[in-house]
Length: 278
Image (cartoon, rainbow, N blue to C red; front, side, top):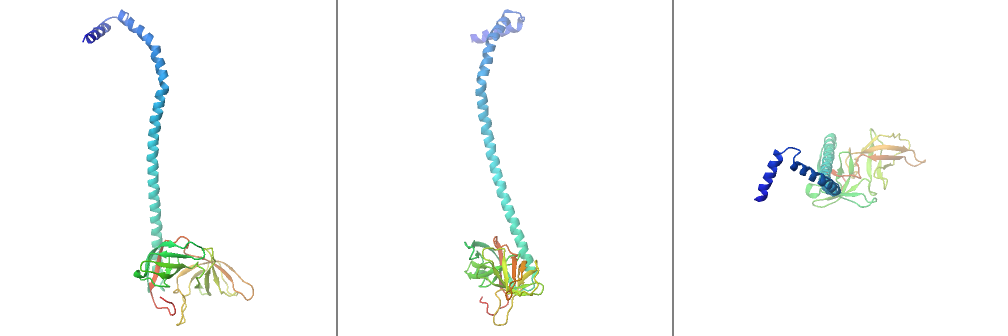
């Protein structure tokens, strides 16, 4: 209580006396003595204050960096999902266009499926799809994408099927060069899914780069080709006349991207093809 009263008395005297009074003189003297000490202490403590501020700013920046990194990962995931959806949408549009554009295949029912497995070797080119006998798939049914022929079903279960691609070494597709032939047998160039060879084309046939190929779909009422007529196959990239007595070397690039298959369609039903086991 005494300290409070003394403090009030000193404050009253300080406010009431002149600047040259004894109390103000004492105050200035004390300030002159303590000022260098205060300045020195401030300078001495500055590195500590700076260090504390650096830690605060560093932790705050790290927190912001973690937040930004999480946002970036989320954005990347969204972009990937969007790109996947766009790709699938494009494939489905191609399949719809393929379904509507071919009068020859109008009698077939197209069942859409997805690739769920791939062969691990180049020599055996097969994929597994999630369409099986329960969806109406049978042996030797043709499998296509919106671009063209992929292959045919060579094994099937209730919920899945194995598809042998046209790049498999066992594959042979009877093909016609548009607009009016000739016909030949399209076989794989093993190890290169972007290059097929059309065999048995005579040297005197004029073949031009860019000509399109479709499945020939021939039948003599006893046996038939493995695929119905009219499925797009690819286009000619090169044609070279062979030696005398041999055939031309006609190189064909398939329309379907056989290395990156995802959504496919199986041609089920359709007219009976003599000699083709279903």
